[in-house]
Length: 306
Image (cartoon, rainbow, N blue to C red):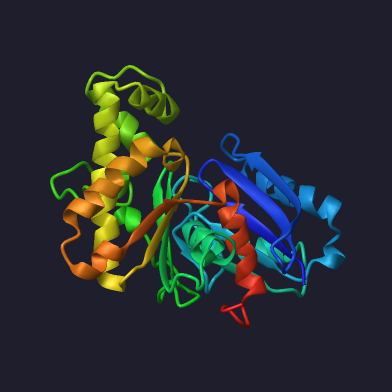
């Protein structure tokens, strides 16, 4: 069985043909364009795969998308794609492979499942039993894999760790809440805070570069993000008895300037003994984690322990 994996992210669409052993037979990525271009971007990225791997060789489609989403209806309403409100993503992709299954989950849920299947979640004698995958980028998302099964919740939206409130007196979040992790730890949130405090750089990449050189405002922006993420991670760990957290995304790519203060904050605030066994790592699969997880939605549907 070879499947088409599709990853609908905050800044790009990606797709791949993935074999049962995890080999990517073909891969494509297209950046998001201007308003109204999203449907064309989806057709383009999928078309690049089916040009190389004929649809007759593909046995199903797994897709991870930014949310909110409704897996029962097969619709998505990504916050970063205003034109897609209750967009019929499953029906649209079903036209590519008529009669074959299409399975949908959140992009961060797929990132977590990908890490569990092909990455750090399975790097020892046994895979992680309770793992949280996080995407820290233009937004902050999350997904849970419990005993090898993605936990999606009754509506399919479990894992929205970016919308845990960590600062009740903080700024409003686009989700409608106040002081969410995303307002502090997302790339735009960090840049917004740094700019309000005198930093004059352009974007999160520049903020990371300045933090590496010791720029005090940039360093503080990353410390604030780390503290917010640590609070959310410890909250999730207390609820689900997590043993492993894997973090990817553009902000996480900053490396030690984020993970150093993050691990210190977790160690400082992990009071309960079982919380102190928690491992926190950067993604081992990079930009492909979501694609592997999307593929796993189909490939592992019958036996998630394999």
